Amino acid sequence: MTDMETSMFLYPWDLIDEGIGPVLDRMKKSGLNGITICPTYHSGMFLMPHNPKRKLVFPEPGALYFEPNRAWHGNIRIEPPISGMADNGFWNRLRKEADSRGMSITAWTIALHGTGIGTRYPDTNVVNAFGDANPAIPCAANDDVRTYMVALAGDLASRGWFDTLLFESLECMPLRHGYHHEVIGIPLTPSTEFLLSLSFSESMVKKASAAGIDVEKVRDFVRAACQAEFDRPHGAKSLTWQELREAADGEMGKFLDFRKRLLTSLLAEIHRETKGKTKLSVIDFGPVWYPMGSDGTGWESGLDLMNYAPFLDQVNPTFYFKDLGQLRAKTAEYVRMLADAGADLPLKPILRPILPQTESRAQLVAQIRELRKSVQGLSFYNYSFLSLETLEWIEEGLRT
Image 1 (cartoon, rainbow, N blue to C red):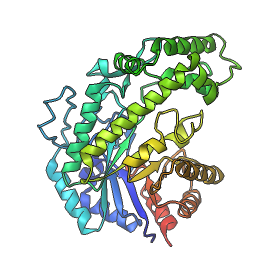
Image 2: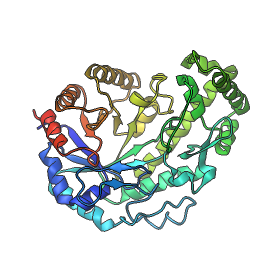
Image 3: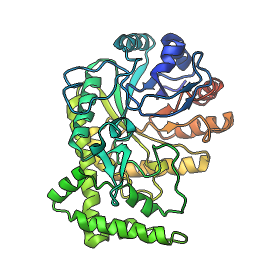
Image 4: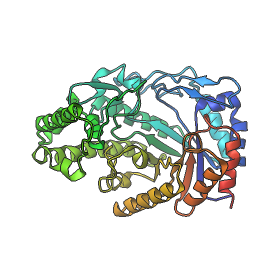
């Protein structure tokens, strides 16, 4: 088997329902030397084909799957619900069982995504240029959100349960992800989708204005550009990054840079809170989610590898592709972006060995073997959703 770092994403209920030991043994047999498990999560509906106790799960939005330290929980404004599954004894047992097998544990931690915060604390929502709040996306400029993120990270890092904290959605989320029954009935260009994702919440407007940005000019441009496309959507042309940066007499470029700084400063706060306790990483959805493509060393999400790299121990991009040629091209692009960013970070991409990305053994084995040529680790999403025979495909791909 390969000696690179490998792991499988899963949920606490997988181990609770199937048993910690049997699941870890199954991972080891498949050639995996780690697991990536969420101590908190957003909502969803999941079909779990091999779970012996349940076939559908509807996670409680934003719930914690551990008993939090009361020094912060109940003493800061945002107080996420504690799941009925929360049992710190579970995490202690998991650490012991993983250590006995030489396996690592990564805490897959949700950041700026999920209705758990947004529905309880509406003032934390992203608000678009038209004044519409999105309860599925907390705003990175909101101080209560930032305080919660840092407190959660510090708590998890101090427990001794985890080798790495892996943050999902430590970025500004796109328009099309995260809410029930999304319907967009007209074509939208990539730039308009992006503009509709920008936050003009009270917190964002206040902080950006204090930084010397004419936020009203930016907001007026966004409204006008979007409405023009709403009125005549067919055949509309997407704006380029340069055109966006020059918009609103250059204020848009200043606003986008400010947005990046907000995210980077949040990551820096998390890093200060966790340094010396766990390694730190982020999931980067840039390769699959953002149709405008890269903006230098970053994406429209505001995640910029040049800015993030000083605070990270590795990076986990999502390589959710069917086509081997596309995977090869995206891998090369990402490696170039890291080089351009001066980021000497281990690259641990995430593959999706489930539909619609993975349809056959040969397809998955080929993708694993292709990536092993140029990356330092691999993760697989997600044990809950795959059939157990897929673990045999992973084993074959990892076999030296």
